[in-house]
Length: 135
Ligand code: ZN
Image 1 (cartoon, rainbow, N blue to C red):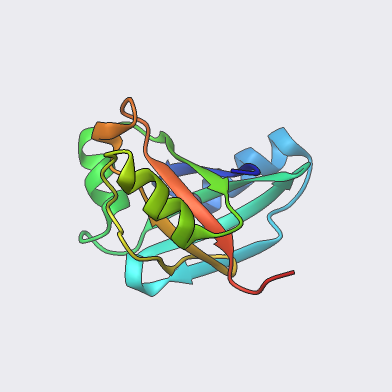
Image 2 (cartoon, rainbow, N blue to C red):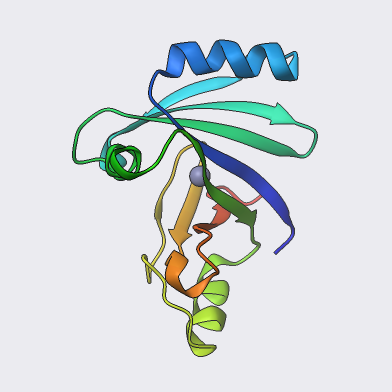
């Protein structure tokens, strides 16, 4: 794991939350992107070498919609930047950790991603995140 790639925050109203984080961070989101496979609308803010990802559900089927049925708005997941996501998935599985995605899938912002199950990581939803295009 190389750095915290981003922190994901579940929000109900992306436009309102964009304004809040623009006020806090002093920068506008550099991108807004819908991830249709996940039924989410996202926006990203750059904060030094890391990012803040705001996530709003676009359908009741979205994991974010289900999360907000049980929880208040707030920190949803922490994403770590990895060089080789396949190797990290294999490494963590070999240690007995449960992954929600055992093979990587397309994420927002030109990433391929896999989530670990929070039951095996102290209740923290961990996202592994690799650049889709090698730099
Ligand atoms: Zn994320």
